[in-house]
Image (cartoon, rainbow, N blue to C red; front, side, top):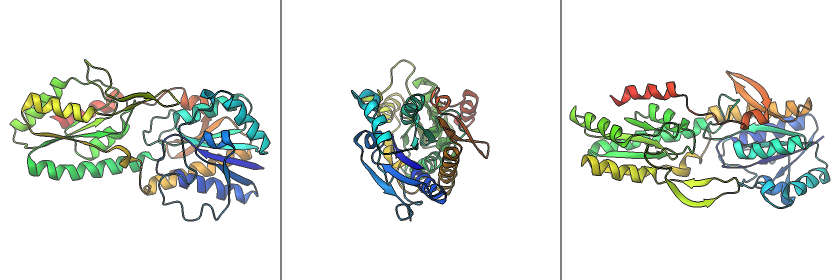
Amino acid sequence: MKIGVLTGGGDCPGINAAIRAVVRTALQNNYSLIGFLDGWKGLLNKEHINLDLNSVSGIIHKGGTILGTSRTDPYKIEGGAEKCKKNFKGLGLDALVVIGGEDTLGVATKFSKEGLGVVGVPKTIDNDLSATDYTFGFDTAINIATEALDRLHTTAESHHRIIVVEIMGRHAGWIAVYAGIAGGADVILIPEVPFDINEVVAVLKKKKERGKKFSIVAVAEGAAFKDKSLIIQEEKLDSFGHVRLGGIAQMLAGKIEEMTGFETRSVVLGHLQRGGSPTAADRVLGTRFGVAAVRLIEKKKFGRMVSLSGNDIADVPIEEAVGKLKTVDTNFYNMTKIFSA
């Protein structure tokens, strides 16, 4: 059997652990493997490398992906999907392991319906994929964001400032909520719940009145004012139709300072949350997902995505996983209001 592997969408810590697990598990069955470079672009352009034990030696601790990635959607390129299917067959592939998030796995769903032997592995720092309790990359991202909040506490306290920290999260606020709670943020703002600037200001003033000389506001990049649209960094869309978000922290900081008179600064964590070595939890989860993906191929259970259910590895239809975003539960988010008092 011959297996292809590709990684698409945004990079995240833990991908290399998953690639390593796919390769090592498949080689035990004497399968041959190739890795496509830069996501679907690699299959489209027939750009690939052979994968063997040497290829994956010493990569489990490395962030990013040794195969490279892109946000290429072959269905948005004229003749792109047909070319990918032709290359799949021309290379003699029996199966393709697709490691990606909502967009990359959305493409995998389409190819699966058209007869390609596709198996999905969920990865995203946003933790917003349905049908899996967690995705690898998330644990590393929240630890990085939490450490940043810890560090910002000390400088905010020293200068008696309010610091607004912009955290990744386009439509789901999981990173902001987890890091905000763990990092002791005074206010946490997420895309799921548009916020009233007057309520935010009231919380910060109340804390000041009771003697707290500094505050931390954690805001997801996709959060929005109740009376305004999303803060858009640029109008240009990627191949999946997404705009680049950003700027909410700077705008919010300006509003807070204007309405309170308190010195306020903004910090954008950005791609720091994606980079660096994965945590132990992400290395283990990536490994478990990689092994499970090959097990699905062994059973010819195509069109499925491996997932985490409790502490068990399960599998679900890829279509089910990408059909709906997993957003922050309102009750869970409301718990954070306890810390705004």
